[in-house]
Image (cartoon, rainbow, N blue to C red; front, side, top):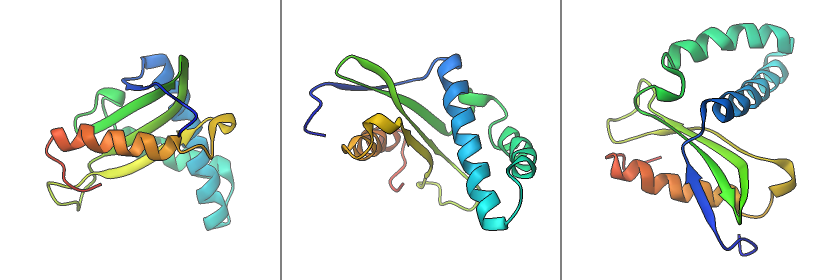
Length: 129
């Protein structure tokens, strides 16, 4: 984190959202295939309708917050998603995904994104991530 002087978390464009979301979807499918001892293709088929249900308006779905990270003029370095899920208290929100491009990992950027997003959702009334 000390390496970077300037950072910005901003709303993703539709194209950025779609790119990051595909990465997220594939990682989730890969994890589920490992845990369930199944094929990744099967897990993708199961995940796509689930995600469509959770995010009926895509990146514009209420109570879901998406941001991309820029550091020192390098754009689109990471992605974070926080969202409300059934069963959470009204002041709670869940970290749904956080991704940093491989070449920028292990530098504290994920922590930075999480801390900054906590500020964003706190302004929206959420007290606990």
